[in-house]
Image (tube, each protein chain N blue to C red):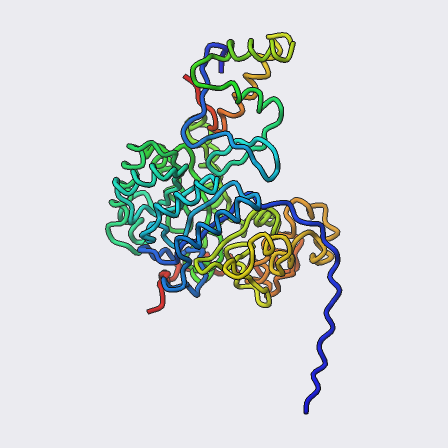
Length: 90
Length: 376
């Protein structure tokens, strides 16, 4: 993915709060991923309208971290999700 | 009079409470229009009269969600053979479960799929028995099935359900593997699960008819490796190679009683779908015992949980926590002992017998199928 891509969760993939384990999970076909802090933060911003650059800027501000570093993390995470077909982008 | 001396009850070791299950397979019915000889259902099929009602399934789903289940697989038999499938899906979603329908497509129509969509169905897994009507209808034992399935696939695509194609591969269709992958892509699937037949249930009875040759298995591995490159980013490919040809066993159920459970059509709760072939296991029914109690301490679930039950060979093995001793049902079927090391393992004393069995079955023409049928 590139900074200009606008990621979204495709149909059949959704965030879910696991009330038994008390953690956020990403549910998809044959998949139940317990999200770590990075995953939770990134997917919480994914809305299908904002691009990766915008999302990274928002996260960089919230976590007071350099935007280049955040953007690299975001792209790495989303690339991994996309390879599993859990995230798509326009 | 006879004095009965009760057998002393063995002292049970104190066990920690198991982690909650992630996935549950609900076999809604054993009825199915198809008669695939590799069906994983048990040889003794449950009749319609014995099936749980809609409300009973809804209660099972609520209990499952409370226990920690996230993913629900609605299977069978053919789940669409239940007239109340839409209500069942609605109940599953109401319980908060991610709901996957595993179907042959037979019994589904565009209208029924629209209703399932409205009920909140998350995902569809459609089986294919072959890449054309000739082979597919022969394997499924159901004339016209392939054409019906193609129409259902078009309706699934129209609605936009995420789709996984599920293809069981064996001696009669492994040569079509590349075409099967192409078909999945053409039907709009995001994923294909290529499962080489696992010999449980009816498949075990039909093993000689289904057993692939070693050459077919090697060719299949190459085909999958190439397809993963060709379809990268477009189609995710899951491949379950045949464990008979592997050096180490599959980590069956990812560890007995560790991750998933299975509910039979009559409410019987099983640690895996084939577990009924193991003599002496005591299965409980969700109609009479709460699901949490069955999962947390039921005798069938505790029978092979953890590593204490393992033979010494597995206890001392560096792969103990990788494959958990392999498949209990397979140990039962081949070694005649559910507590034995899975005979697939190169370290098992039964491996030579398994190799001889493969050689014998693949050196002759396959016998005809014995189709899966309900008793009349």
